[in-house]
Length: 114
Image (cartoon, rainbow, N blue to C red):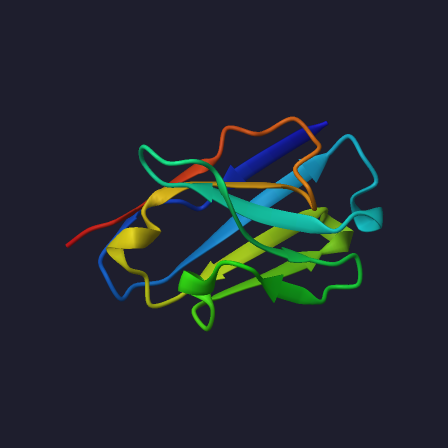
């Protein structure tokens, strides 16, 4: 099982990023997938998830209306589109199956700063 996140970067407030997570080692299309994040000095938190069929739900109130989750089952990849980024979005972002049951990847760093 391998989860490889990418797309993180340093971005100015108000900017956008699209994160990707490539999954391998399990039947990706059979699992709901989640994005999590861990801000500096804080616990990892659930951002939201996308079902096997592609329906997404954002759980984290602070990003509702700004973040969306999607997936491409043909490419075993899940995406996190982040718009109107704020400094509070600075974190390491991770993907995993719905409840975080798979081994964690290395994450991808998102830094929002002027």
